[in-house]
Image (cartoon, rainbow, N blue to C red; front, side, top):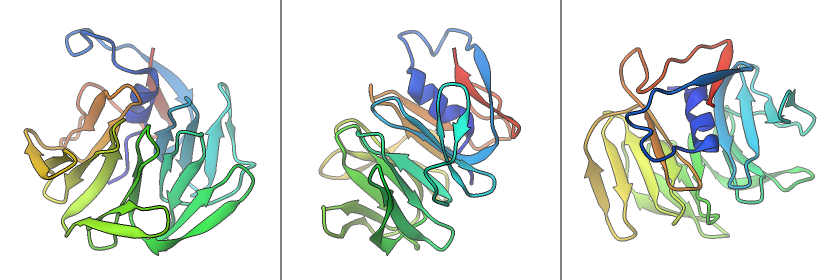
Length: 209
């Protein structure tokens, strides 16, 4: 399931107190893509429909950094990590793309810099700085990481799980994808045709005003 573009823009601009009951206003951002991520420094990166990696300048999308992928997450320094079509993992160091060990289908990074990966068979791995340590056996689909470095996942049955640092906890509700802001706000893309809290279109990404 493709990550909904509006979700990461929500993460970028946060969710003020009372947002659950306030009507949401949306601003169109011209682009079309399959996945998007926002770093703790506010940098916004996008996987386009063509697989190219783009960075948002505030008015346009810039692809001069190169790279191609399917899923993307951004570290606290504003550098993206991606999983590619062939499940390889790549990290941008500010100048060039570096191939990382392992393979995976989705990736998430917390505001504290911890990196988590969904493996080819739905396993959950944590990056140790040298290798990937398995933290969950299977059944995971998408992942996001909170500011403390704890992963939240949506599973293949659309259930939602969070790791509290010691064990996995099942949470209420169901969803396809999940995103977490640097302030700890958690946003979920639901399972219906209409995403929770907002509508999404292919031709225009949306951010909360």
